[in-house]
Image (cartoon, rainbow, N blue to C red):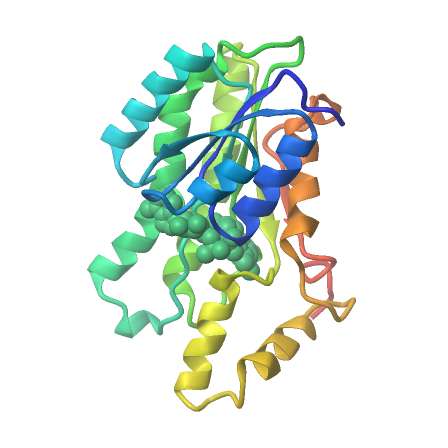
Length: 260
Ligand SMILES: NC(=O)c1ccc[n+]([C@@H]2O[C@H](COP(=O)([O-])OP(=O)(O)OC[C@H]3O[C@@H](n4cnc5c(N)ncnc54)[C@H](O)[C@@H]3O)[C@@H](O)[C@H]2O)c1
């Protein structure tokens, strides 16, 4: 599954999953444009010998500027991975409209802005099999979860936005595939945040006990790691996945397959 010759933009490259994805895509030969808030992903880009662009994914002017820079320096794109995201664990009635909108902006509206501003670049893709977009949803975008209403709503929107875009691009004759990935809990700062919150509230004895509890939700009994997700993303970007379009792919070792 070589990605040689493919120019790929990754958002949220400084986080747990974004770093693993960036590293693997680099190892597979992709030419990478990595991005995150301010300098948050600069070390990842340095390690991957990649171009780094600061990009707050909620800001349309920032997307415009990044798209213009990529067109100028790289002439187009062959793939985009929309990884950037934030979580909020909070009861629905305690969530303010401003908090709700912030979660939609980072997790969901960002994907809309990405599709809107990178589609012209993806039409300049190399190779016979077209371009590929991978959007990060979650298993919480496949089913609801108590305490995560804003996050679930945003990730559910990513799922259907991906499908609608996939169908629209294909029916326009654009060779741009769009798929969503739906990881189960993956051991990163984002997954540890809510556990730390519960420890601080005295509802869990320790972060490690909380992580054990999360792992036990997996039929296999071990929590997912960023590298478990990275390989799936690399596959979706590769020409081996050239006939996968509008697909929602759980990366959860069977959590969502489990009969309740
Ligand atoms: N870790 C999990 O358990 C899990 C499970 C399912 C889905 N996901 C999704 O995977 C993606 C990556 O999560 P992670 O676990 O690596 O989280 P993480 O917190 O380790 O990394 C998230 C990255 O997004 C960046 N980011 C946040 N707001 C941004 C903004 N406005 N503009 C640009 N970048 C911004 C952060 O700086 C950070 O580098 C997210 O979309 C998350 O919702 C994670």
